[in-house]
Amino acid sequence: MSVNKFRPHVVVIPEDDANREVMVGFYNHFAVADRCVFAAPPAGGWQHVLDVFKESYIQHLVRYEQAYVVMVMDFDGRVDRRQFVEQDVPGELRPRVFLIAWRDEPEHLKVELGISFSDIGERLADECSKGRLSLWNHRQLDHNRNELARIAAVTGILFAP
Image (cartoon, rainbow, N blue to C red; front, side, top):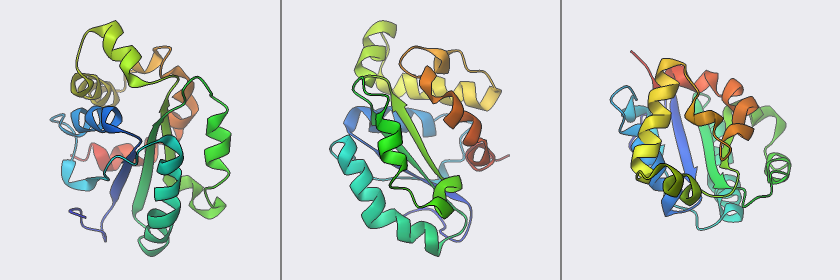
């Protein structure tokens, strides 16, 4: 891990390569404090994201009180997947674990906007840094509203001065 584990940091677990590319675009945005972000390798499916979280990052969160985890996955049209994933997050860690998901998958937004995954990530980071949520209100992402409100704890780490 390239971040300082004893300082506030965010671990991101992407489901697949498309989610990883969006994430790379996000943390390559000029306003993101990229030294505070660790990008785990793509897990290889939404269930594997949860497995990686349980096997590797529950202990990390217990050991490092300034650590946060963001799981990034596709819901494949099943928004009830959020409740399934959240039930495996220990209650005491819930304030430091977040789930950002695509209603279907990021490929839909890429085709619709005609831009790369990396550009999508950069636009999402730009909106977060400026407190705007226009792309976040897109049908593929709008179900994340409650999670975006919770994730405010991480914005101070991601967009540190």
